[in-house]
Length: 99
Image 1: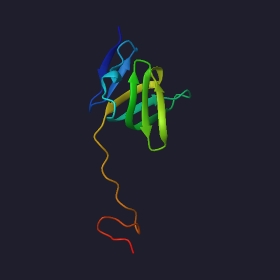
Image 2: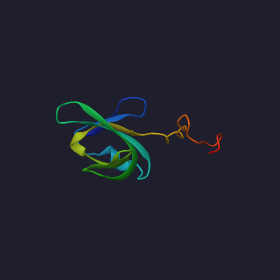
Image 3: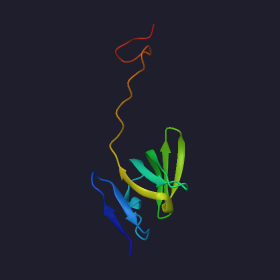
Image 4: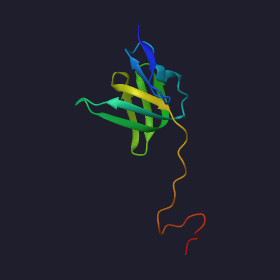
């Protein structure tokens, strides 16, 4: 039987896929999912969790929605909300009014 295995710092990996640990994540939470690519490298999907089921997850990243199939998931976790982005130099911000 498959089981979720803790890897420290809130990360988990799954050996087998019988109990999809990601199905317990709340939709709308900010998550990071590390997936194994076909060439053996890894890629992360960081963003808002849109959907989850035993077959995988859908994460809304800055570049668009990403579907990660269960067989590709290596590790993942729910992460805190992103810090507010600072304005770039020369852009109006809360402390710098527009001209």
